[in-house]
Image (cartoon, rainbow, N blue to C red; front, side, top):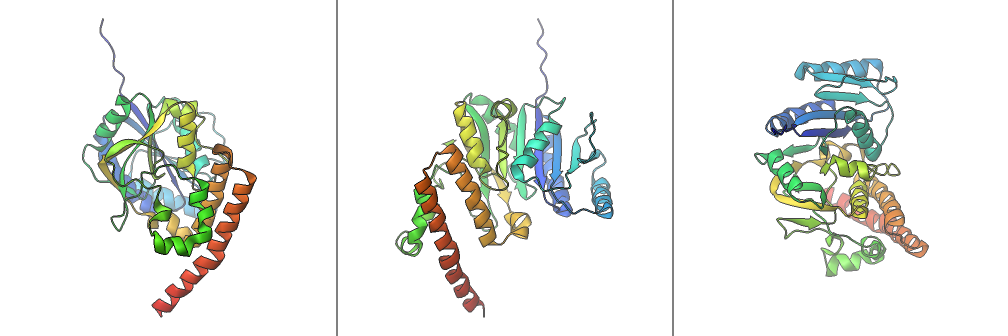
Length: 324
């Protein structure tokens, strides 16, 4: 009896906040890698910018249509029962859903009638470097039965490696901030102890959220990302959700991608405001998924407040003096 093999399908979610030109550059870079993936692919771009005028929307549509002929634009305010999605689909939400909700929306819309095998969450500030990227990564993901999520080696503008990471307790991650100056002098890498730098591939606790390739069946099984978060901690939480169904996170450092956060988060948040957003998301994660006590939460909030208002202010002032 002849077996019929269905082409694997990959659904790709790109959550953005304006940045149309950056998205164009990203897609131009990504599409050749998708062509060699061996997968039937569908891209969902979810634009969370809430203040587009009608003229702004037309400008975005014009710029994207100039570069990509097979693209569908969707106004999420218009409730359409059926959408004939294309290879690239651009969703105007007209409200800021946040990162978790934006990706959940991309999966909900994009997977309807598509039945994807893989779900890729990727930022428009990520550029793939290695050849045969997706064939190698999907093959590795398929070959390990107890892995739900996989990611490559990620480096930044200064060749700094971004992940993978081991679990870090709230005591080490935040409560230790009470002693920030002392620990920074005695052990400069103390607050980076969750980074794993000596691994080429293997099981890890979590990856950086700018590139997460998941088995769609597992993503469905855990009900997607936690919509209680807005920005940050998504990769912590999704790893915890996978662990609850006895599925793991895997790092595959034989493949390489480049991530430039200055194109996205750093456009809209300075370091201190980003730290504050990250802290609140982390507290949500520790409370809901790591079951920290009220005392631990209180100490973490107090330590972070001291760090943010005292130590960060001192460091900012020193930097300002040096710049003069």
